Structure formats: structure tokens, C-alpha cells
Length: 149
Image (cartoon, rainbow, N blue to C red):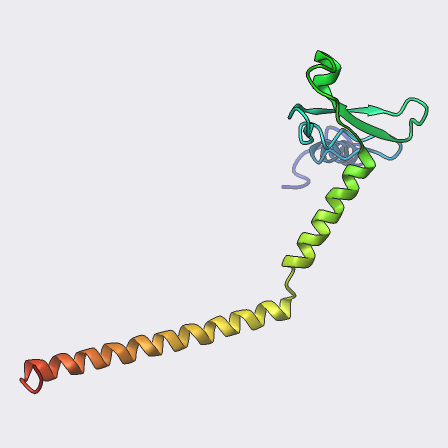
């Protein structure tokens, strides 16, 4: 309940602290700082199956690449050492997601139409079931009354 006691801190400080908590809770990175490696543990080497690690370009610090950990740690005789620019990996992920959405996306009106078609099919199946049940019961009655053998 609000205003039931004297606040320990003023509302501006409280709001600033809450904002900081929310930023950490959703892993929001303020402008100007680099984000964590979101691909960490998700990209594997096509040669040896080892994990790929992220590194910055030496003369081009504005881009990153991923390289095989196995080659770096155990040597070239264990892995030839896959290498991929981070930007290229993001582009591939983007294209795959775009293709998936294009293939599986259904508009709201198409979804409603599909539901309507399924509702009609269910009604038809229910009618068929009811008709079959009535026919079976009539057949059974005729059998019991001796009209058919």
C-alpha cells in the first residue's frame, strides 16, 4: 500500500535503482558497451565438432570472427581449424529464420479460414458417425425382430 510510511529514499532514486535491476534482469547493455557473445557454446567446428571461440580482428577491431578451440589448444594435427566471420554467421541465421517464417507464417485471416474449414469437417464427420450409428441400430432392430438373418 502506498503512502503508509515515510520512504527510506526518494522516488527518483528508487526508480533509478529499479531501472538498473530491470536492465540486469533482461541482460540489456547500455549504448556504447559491447554485448556478451550470444553465440557462445552454440557454434561448433565443422571439422572436429569442437566449440568455436569468438575473437576480435587484430587490425580490424570493429569485427569479430569465430575459430575452433581444438586447433588453438591441441594443435593443427587435431583439427584443421574452422574459421568464420561473426557477421557471416548472423547473416546465415537471419536467412534461415526468414525462410522458416516465409514457409510457416500464416495470416490471421488464413488461420480463421483454416479453423472454419476444420469446424465444417468435424461437423461432417459427426454427421457421418451419427448416420452410421442410426443405420447400425436399425439393422440390429431388424435382426432382433427376425426381419433379417
